[in-house]
Length: 343
Ligand SMILES: CC(C)(COP(=O)(O)OP(=O)(O)OC[C@H]1O[C@@H](n2cnc3c(N)ncnc32)[C@H](O)[C@@H]1OP(=O)(O)O)[C@@H](O)C(=O)NCCC(=O)NCCS
Image (cartoon, rainbow, N blue to C red; front, side):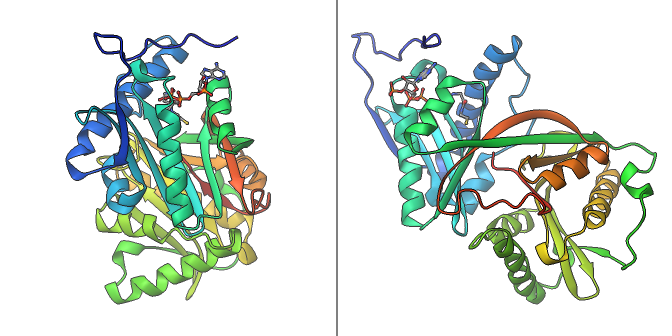
């Protein structure tokens, strides 16, 4: 049996509205943000029984994503006048990430979501994204059905975890420190001429995790718009790992939190102590910036990374299921020390 279907957005004559899917334009940005806020607000209210004041706790998805990947952002417009849905997509090299996707509650179940996803799929094809993925709500038959239609298979859970920053040293810091001296630098502090070479070193790390994966755009947009910073974990001249961090304001960080969008330790150099030290450095940065929490998302197939966060005192705020399709569909190595968020 199907869940209650929302009232269709019929016009006074009972006709279905004319919907057109097109790319986002600059003038649409605040409307798209409202569509996401309103739709996810409605959805969460139905799930939780109360409406959150802000659907994403102050996190923003639209403006910087559009600047980063304008060709991957789509709206569904009714009669050339009203934006009723939107979908964002981005390519990390050969990996395409879909989401968020939203259709205003009164316009749902009229295939608008599918039209938006189809547009994003075409964008992935044009850009040769060999592996495509999204995260969704594992308990929703509608969501599983919808993404299945496009060939996405449910995989494992992504846990969005957090830890309150307090004055006591993080548990992680009291464990045995690694012998080799690691240092943390900020990407924003590098000379402009050094940034390109550092991006290439980061690409080598992501390429070793999944062939063709490249996070350069995410690093550059955080740097260019000062959405936060990218921390570089180094031993001498060697890049051991990096973490793309967002701080609240106009980024994907909710109010009061340092949010890590992506972190990776170079696979050949991976040691749990490196992740533990990196997490401690992130907490120190959060403390310095006056944040109350650090948010770390982790995909549970990166089992060692997940277990390390649990060990370091991180608790799960909520979970979503990752869905994937395409080549290298199950590329994750459970011992890789990676934290990534596909929202
Ligand atoms: C998810 C969302 C974008 C889908 O948009 P939509 O316009 O309603 O989707 P569509 O009408 O194109 O497709 C929905 C499909 O699910 C089907 N469906 C609806 N309820 C269902 C249920 N309980 N079980 C199985 N299938 C269901 C519909 O029949 C339709 O399939 P069909 O066209 O083959 O009949 C929309 O519901 C939404 O914005 N939800 C809130 C925000 C959200 O959850 N975003 C996605 C996060 S991953």
